[in-house]
Length: 280
Image 1 (cartoon, rainbow, N blue to C red):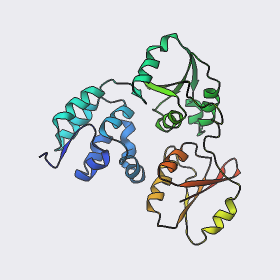
Image 2 (image 1 turned 120 degrees about the vertical axis):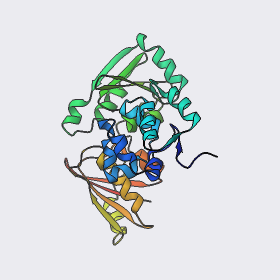
Image 3 (image 1 turned 90 degrees about the vertical axis):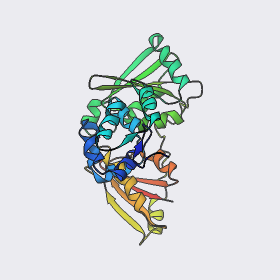
Image 4 (image 1 turned 90 degrees about the horizontal axis):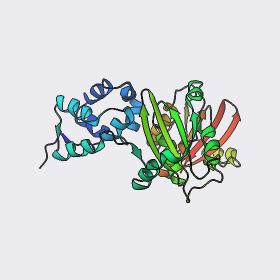
């Protein structure tokens, strides 16, 4: 039987923290991308969904470095942990395995449409609409290359559901995520992928009178607004709804809500003031 503190590359960060709270400082010291774990709200939400190998990919760190650091604070690495770690080393991100690898092999023959979203992010602008606009124009034999400083996992998940292949490469300080159209890709209504229903917002809001939990995420840096909302949803009591004050329509939030069986109504009051009602 494995020891209580035995782990492998698939162990969730939340499990590590439960076993040994020193995990937070150890991981945060390895790479600046992991310092978000020090934020209690982000930690509680992210740690449950991210494994050691996921964290290594996001932080662009060899997974063995993470495992060795964890060994130093008392964790034991299962025999399969080393095998899993070695299989993850220098492995590019893919969403559906063989098909994405085939797409990447043909990469040299494709026309690359480049889109640098870093200027928008620097201004606090969500680049979702810019990316969707470019995606919709892709033709056969073309690939969209999104230039960013981190791997856009929510965007990858949204487009995966739309039938797009994706893979990610890293250069010094830059993450290049590629999207390729397939025969099954949906090209209609990509900009409105949220399918938001604002028509009956006020009536629905009134129906939750006395059962609303209010949260204001305006002014928070990405991805804290989404993480804060997801955290608040975990704290909701049965029959309650979340009333959110936001600066923009959160394009990546709806897939996360669908996974949790929540509905969302949106009421944009002006360019910097959007109200969200999230409920079951």
